[in-house]
Image (cartoon, rainbow, N blue to C red; front, side):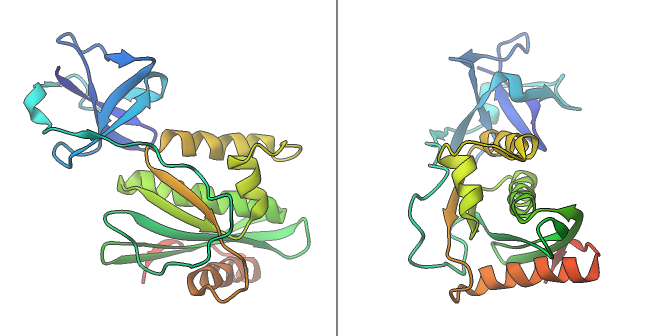
Length: 229
């Protein structure tokens, strides 16, 4: 079957289609590839695929090499991790994300450290008046957005048990419903993501640095965006 270029959230992908360019889905999910020959086949909800600038062109079946279906990873480890990795594995992006606020609610910021290949980026973002939980969720959202932009698997560590609970363990959402839904939607759209809980202030170097970046944003009331270090 041919391929058609489509948008999946913030990424351009190649999606299975018929000779007329109509998406071919099985059970509502369409086979997609982030790259033509990386050997990994993902499956996305047809409703999440939108036409891109190059979607009118139909590529032949052989445009993409053989691909093995990637089993979507569990979104969370139910237990705190015993080790806190400092290097990414394979082609993943490894992220530590944290939030902070002065008062609850109060001036709030998010911090994150991302590593992949030989790259390292840091984020320090002021988000205005918010609660600590909002800051934690926003930090996770920024990490997922980065992984989507990079088209890489994501392994994310957070010390927010609240975020792990509402996003992956079925905790009842009493506040921040719109933000929780937005983060959940971003997670669902990413084909390969894992979330882990890491204990805060227990010597996990990258987690501590993410906290420092969040606190810096609160204190300075400034945002850096993702910067290379």
